[in-house]
View 1 (cartoon, rainbow, N blue to C red):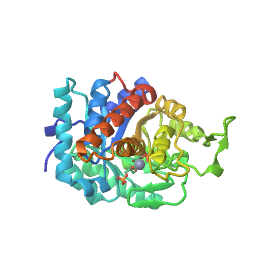
View 2 (view 1 turned 60 degrees about the vertical axis):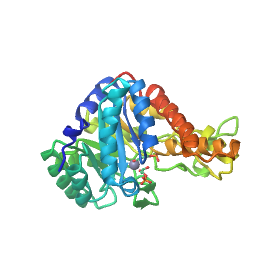
View 3 (view 1 turned 45 degrees about the vertical axis):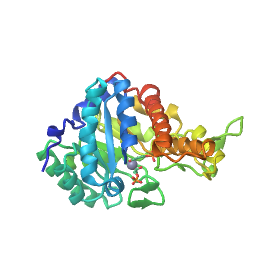
View 4 (view 1 turned 180 degrees about the horizontal axis):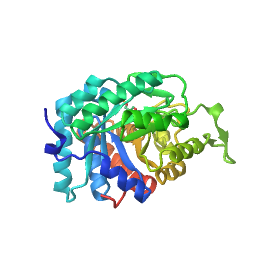
Length: 330
Ligand code: G3H
Ligand code: 13P
Ligand code: ZN
């Protein structure tokens, strides 16, 4: 058993208080490898932003739980070496069982998500409560979820989404004791968030997705004022990356994300954690495809992972400065 405090990590409690009071959101960026971790830390140190390093159970399988824990500890030391001791949270993304959450807590995570959104309401409450009891005994914060996002939730595949029902949130929060709540207001995971027939077209013929359900968010805020809300599936799917990927041999179709102005608006509300994974995947893939197309004779991984890491860093800086508003808040 290792406590996250020994690793120099923090839980999310104080960060969310600051984000609610200051009307910004903390970035939650997923990572699976060293280059992603380096880009996140470099960007957040340079912009002086607190950050949540997110690990899915798939990431844990891919990279190995021991390595990931030491990488998170390394992230803390790396940030100091770069000149700024920014607050760093190590968070389990989409934990689906009590055992997985417990194992992460015992292994040095400072925050966990228990995603019981695919269970019945009663089973979600019971599972979330059990995780909260164990986590709080170790001063680890817990994110719960109400409502189902369309798309792929790690091992859980949801065909259709169900918006969060605002009338359930007070009961859920008080019965479970969670520290934050992920809600479903029209975002979804992955790079294909909307089908073209769900969108309209602007004057230039570009697809415009349907707006997020801010009415549901407002109703939730009225019922649990000041309570930290989380948005999953919040990638914007930058069309420049989609175009580069497709120009250099990719075949992405109908890739559509959440417009940045809607995320900016959400970040100024009770939404204080915004999850971004797919945009990073697109940035890395675009940079690597372009590199190989322009440099077919190169094969040293540093030569293509280096530019991919630079592009990722640019993306993360843009998010914290121009979308989430967390720059300067570390
Ligand atoms: O919400 C899902 C995250 O994007 C993590 O994805 O399970 O493929 O690592 P993953
Ligand atoms: P995106 O697929 O929109 O990046 O969402 C990531 C996420 O919600 C991770 O939990
Ligand atoms: Zn998610």
